[in-house]
Amino acid sequence: MARGDGGKVVFETDDDSKAFVFRLGQVCDSHGWRVHAWVLMGNHYHLLLETPQANLVSGMKYLMGTFSQGWNRARTRRGHVFQGRYKSVPVTGTDADAYYFRIVADYIHLNPARAGLAGGRNGPLIGYPGSVSRMISTGRSDRNMSERHHALVQALIA
Image 1 (tube, helix red, strand yellow):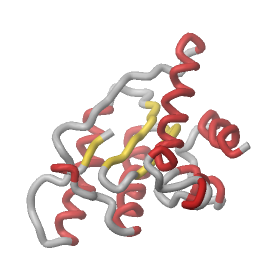
Image 2 (image 1 turned 135 degrees about the horizontal axis):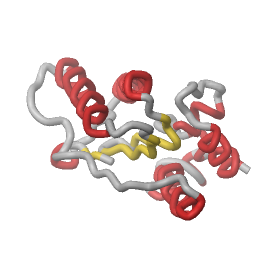
Image 3 (image 1 turned 90 degrees about the horizontal axis):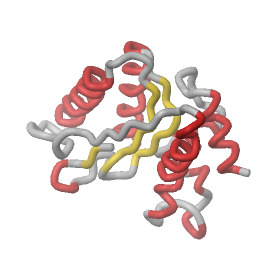
């Protein structure tokens, strides 16, 4: 999780969101990460990642660095895009921790509804454009999304 510097909106346009997801795909390919859940929330994002190798720091440096450079270049500005270092909390996928894994995945998927951006009068949660749920519902998920993640999303839809 990382927030926009000073609480500012980071994902202002669809192009910003697409650029972030593109960079996330690049780092998944280069670092062997698997995405279990993600959501972009205007001024912050959440990721639930599987990192088979000890490369979270280098991958996040690439993800946040390249995204920030492009974001600044598009606005002809300089400076920080994100507020400090990203927050990371280890979550294992083991049987002993499966319940916590599900709680974290649910928290991420339901974040737009909690913020009043999707669900109810704001349209279906599955239609929220800044989440993997939308990609799966439209058939645009990619190979870096785990089978477990597909199962979680299907459970949320049901």
